[in-house]
Amino acid sequence: MARGAEKGNKGTSGNRMYFMDNLRSFIILLVIAFHVAIGYMAPAPEWWYVVDSKSNPIFNIFVMTTDVFIMPILFLLAGYFTMPVLKKQGMSRFLREKFFRIVIPWIAGVLFLAPAITYMIWYSRTSTPPAYFNYWMTNFFSAATFSHAHYWFLGDLTWFLIFFSVLYKRFPTVFQRNEKVSSPSFGFLVLFGLGTAATFFIANLYFYADAWFSRLYIISLQPTRFFLYVCYFALGIYAWLKRWFTELGYMPRFEYWMSSSVIAMLAFVCYRITFTDTTPILLRAGHAILHSFFCLTTAFGFISFFHKDFNRKGDLWRRLSANSYRIYYIHQFVVLPIAYMVQKLEFSVWVKYFSVSIISVLSCFIISEYVIGKVLYRKHEKTL
Image (tube, rainbow, N blue to C red; front, side, top):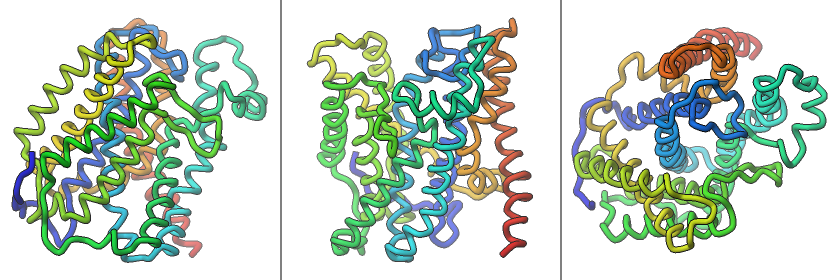
């Protein structure tokens, strides 16, 4: 697994890593496709907001596999770009800017937008849903209903940023970037995979593999994934310190990591489809190991793939990158109404899925680029 540096001058301008920007944009679009697919699972989970009349078990496999790696990749990328900004700005300015960019949108999303998202469970299933304001004031904040919706990512990211900022302030020498590039050893990668598997396995002893926990209100998390996400955020920081993924630094070998990802995916799917609440402890350990190494090989596989084929700054990629955060923030308000409109139509499940996915992606981009980006931000700039 360990490998020396690969040079990559394509798409490099100064220190800009276009393949990382493009990978983040791709994952955000994949999140939309993932959320659309949940409504077409056979059966779809009861807690999902809009469940279609059509279903297909292939969507179960798509959701099952995609769910393993999309968020760890986002946390890895977030960790990678945290340290250079933190070092440049200092802790006070860094946290102040994150407060306005992440914390306020997170809190606003949970208090004012997540209720509308979860309300779709009742609105899409019954002919007499409860009055929205009454639902918001009473039902939403109950232990059985409360949810951060997809804004949980911003909440978890907030706590990670605070935690690692405090560590940086307390132990600055630990976060000094290496002068020389270095590559991860085979042993390091195996230990990382086993370590993340251990966090998954221990939590799985007390919680179901896909369970959510939101009772503390100030954080929403999946117990089996939370510390795995912490590890990937920390891995992103470590990768930056060791100069991985830079022009002269370590770059995962595409053929090796992608082939490993495919093998791990096949093993994971075969294992996962037989997994239940009553699975013996030893088999739960096997599930945790497969989950962990499928996640790791896929994350490095996508990094190598985007470095190899998408390390450039085309106009479309540039615009997707600029809009990716806003697209993530608003996408459920586009996906759910469209899914609801076609919910009971007697069309092929594939026509429905691809239509909802494509229309949602295009609509999110248009709203972000031409409404939020051009109109609202211009009005904001005029008031400054």
